[in-house]
Image 1 (cartoon, rainbow, N blue to C red):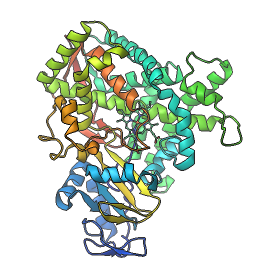
Image 2: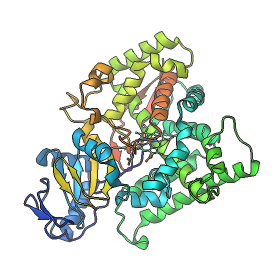
Image 3: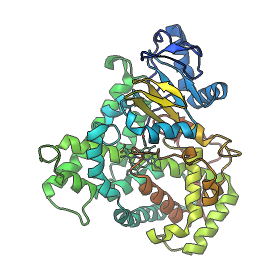
Image 4: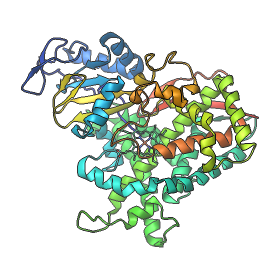
Length: 478
Ligand code: HEM
């Protein structure tokens, strides 16, 4: 999913608030004098703020890792007078996402640009509006629906396997993006997006680029914001086209898809009227984006990791050969393909697509015994939690067996949270896990992709954790 991309997400040069010095006792936006977690000294000039922002932009993961190494599991780095708590410990994540979930909202500055693009939909709303939307959308993710989606996912993966030319080199990241986009459009909107995938991919690139940039500049000084608006228009054209088509046809697919649910929904708690096109558009564009880019990255990283770990790849192939023996997988096979799922899960540990999660305290709260005043921003570095040797010995190694039930039981529950946790956890978690397992099971029976010689694999941590410059791979037949 799409989340915050910065330590502070929107880190503007400016004067820190009075009393924001560390580690001494400081005044934050509350009446009490209170102890705050350790953290970097306040930035005293615009120049140092710009320097900080630049270092963060160049290597955000290295920058944040260094800070955790220096200050421990929780650090305090106020920005423009806003108290900011940065976390990685599973207990602290549990406090924010589960225990005190209701005290935090999505009004974090990281969501401002996101909201401009996605509108007011499930990912960005709070309170009663969010609850109403979640209730409305939830039926599209019931177990029964997921069973039906499984055959579409396999069909799309099988189609791709038949298109792939043995021995050819292709950008697997682009292929996974198109595959997951087609799957989400067919399952949730009964829409065939072939022919439009280029426009979507282009819009996503622009948007991803804009979201990781400073959001404090006025529109005329921000080329990213203007580009993002262009990208939004391109996506809107596709989405509004789908809504218009459905309204005009008046037909209902069997079983009814998410688009049908939204087009015919009655706002029972409001005036009983139907949803307007803008409200439907906001939900659709959210599902459209949240529902494909994250799964696509997770699959791409899995292919890369398998290509680098022939032992794990052999075990995967052995499981597929034994259970499927060359036939296409089905929903019923999922339980018999644990190793396939572990590979996907371990890839999301090493490369969590949503590598940070951000929140804003809507009321006073507490994290790790520290007072968190209302208005504070909190950034949870899932990437750092997933790379912590306390929960994952030899954390950089790809070891799918880490996800065997007995190994999982030994870790704190929130040591793994690619889909977040609590009430705002990902609504598409099961959709994504099923899709990951089925796509791997279909394609890995026929191909073993190998990294193109000379390609240097790097991460591009922006909105989601993408592979920088794609993932060119040679499609070796099995
Ligand atoms: C590997 C794939 C995926 C990952 C890693 C992922 C991750 C996440 C995360 C971390 C959140 C919480 C964000 C936050 O708290 O700020 C989230 C929320 C969400 N995800 Fe996913 N997601 C994935 C797939 C999907 C799919 C397939 C769909 C839909 C088809 C989807 C739809 C959503 C929506 C609508 C929300 C907002 C839920 C709410 O706030 O009620 N995601 N996702």
